[in-house]
Amino acid sequence: MKDIVNKRSFPRRKLDLEFDLIITGSTVPAVVTDFSLDGMGILIKGKSDIDTQILDLKIRDINLDATGKIIWKREMFSGLRVGMYKIGPLEGMLGYYRLSDIVLGIQRTRKTGVLNIKAEQWKKKIFFKDGEMVFSSSDQEQEQLGAMLLASDRISSRQYQNTLSLAKETGKSQGAVLVEMRYLTPQELVQAVHQRVEAVIMNLCNVEDAAFSFREEALPRNEIVILKLNTNDLLYRGSRKTEHIDAFRNRYLRHHTSVAVSSEAGSILDRLVLETRDKEILTLINRKTSLAEILSVSPLTEEDTLRSVYALFNSQLLELEADRAEEKSEEQESAREEKTFDSEISDKIDKLYREHKTLGYQGVLGLLPGATSAEIKRAYHALAKEYHPDRYLLMQSGESREKLNVIFAYINEAYRELSRTGSVSQTPQASAHQKEPPATNNKTMAQEKYRQGRESLGNQDYENAMTFLGQAVYLDQSVSDYYYFYGIALLRNKKIKEAEASIRKALNLSPYNADYFAELGHIYLRLGFMTRAKNTFDKALKIDPSHARAADGMKNILAVQSD
Image (tube, rainbow, N blue to C red; front, side, top):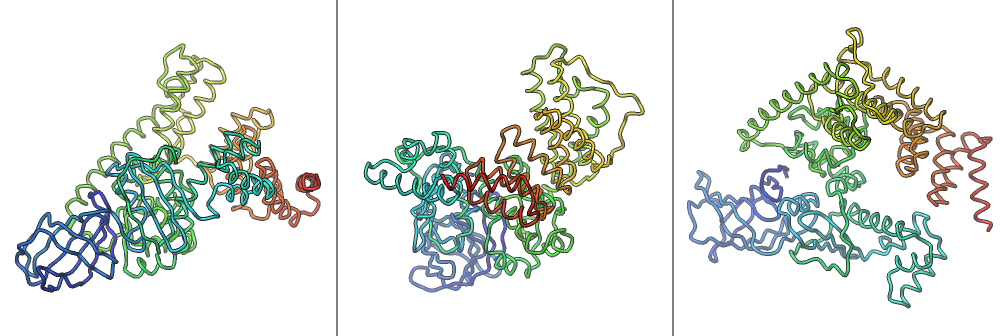
């Protein structure tokens, strides 16, 4: 089966599947040429025309039993080609329709309603408002709020059992009882509900043996909480956990599938926080690139590369295709537009790169003398968003990306300096010898940012430390200490979850560093994850049995457990 995304509401897959079509009681040989959740293309062999506009479609190979209305037809040498719109509810099996395709179609059509998904052992629901996911539910025990809090060590087994019993007795939700018993604060409950809703959706990304149906209807406001969810990010993160890499490999690698950046990638990138390895894979794709070529040049293992491509595919950043001949003219036009767009952006980057030192801190942010702190902050956020290098991962010019790194670092430097002085008058000008070459060495820049970050940490200037070390990480993602000390700076700024993620990245680069494990263990202690903290301290002490900070952490755990 060949996958292709086009401009229809629901992404359409190419297919070459023969079946018997029944027309007015007679069986006629036919071929499904492409299909989606709400329509399909069929070639009816040996026919030049048919009288009916309505066809009964019973196709066992794709588990389809539906009624279709012909919306166009075209006579061909081999028969009659027809395009059909399926009448009735949007339903099917996840083995034949990707969850990301279903979600994208609902998103494009801005539908409000409920997607019901049912397997033999469970039922789940995803609620949509104006095309965006806003809530989910599940009847699986391990996906209930209390069970997930227990599994993540945020409540004890005794607290879980007590609140579960009280919830059954009073008819209240277990979450409400947890707050009433002061096991959770209201803010912690909201966060836990949000995480549970996200987990249910992400777990569905790898389900293939389940029936689904979507119904447009008003949402049951008394049963759900309307949450702001990032649809593409959930599809991306859920797909990264796939257990179906072998099936993905067999399906696409052997068919010489080519990979292309989707036409919607620009807007989707703004809504995603990609892992470093996935950014690397994305930069390998130039127009059309075969999957085999990507595997041959990827710095990752074959499995990790396929996992990245799979996640980028399901988040709608990439398209996998084997044959797009019928859309050739559209593709060529798209390529021309993309080339023009790249040229315009490159010119804009070149101009600011040439002028940023001359403009100085005030000029680069577009500020007038006497600008207030709020105006400085507002100007910084707008410019940092516009010139953030992650927005231009798809840009073909490596030189332009290097210039972006310089510009982005200078924008951050301008904001830090103007915020510190509270003035826009101190705007250093550049002399001729200050101009930097286009391909400024990122590693050298990163080393300087790291030095400034460590110095700020030593001076307890934690906000600037976070800025400098964050820039070091961005400029050079190969140094574990950059991630580690960035994590420390995040921790000092009370960004605990971000600190955990950064130190885990440090451990990915340096998996036998006892200091990293010890600090991560203390983060888990602060989060209340006792089991996870104990396991992490154990790892640190196995590497260095005399590690004082890990030993202190273990003592704290033993003291809590003995109380």
